[in-house]
Image 1 (cartoon, rainbow, N blue to C red):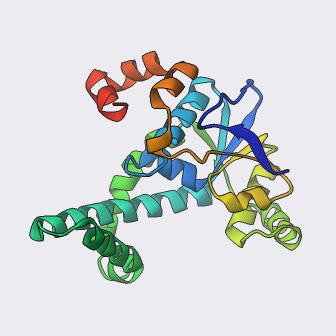
Image 2: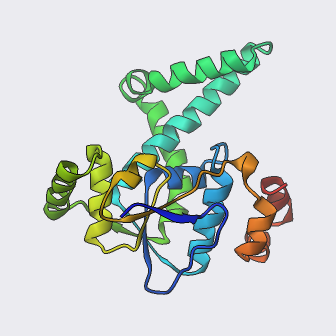
Length: 231
């Protein structure tokens, strides 16, 4: 298999009731984290799959990684905001440098030394994740999945974590692996759905109409949030 010719950021992915989609961590992060550069295409695509009642699958290890990633992102956002308040003249270069330093120190500074802060941001991340995973079937990484992942690593140029994702998708016979990790296209087992579209190049209004999501999102989000999210 290889990367699908369908770019979910500009085309409709056909969905039938029996199709199963394994969703990688990066897609879930983009869906939940509004500041992510691919938030809009991932948000609308997952919303579309949910509306179509597609079988959405992921693994327990993906959810663990998702919570850790969101916790770190929320922490960095708050700390950069605090830095900006203290240093109102800081330009984007300085703010990006500060974010980089915070990202690099997440494990040593927060995970190992500030358990209460870690707990605070983990709770915030979980509050974002919990409603979404109610739409997913979660699978554990069994001994068989681990064995399959090791076999995949021998034949395909994939890192161990990526091989585990592919093995999990194979184990539950998913039609597609949804991932924006380009390396996933190196696997020879499962077709990968992805998009190169960034928020700024994404035809949001056009895709809202194409995916027939406008009315549903207006009802679920309300007019004010809808207009802010999809200007």
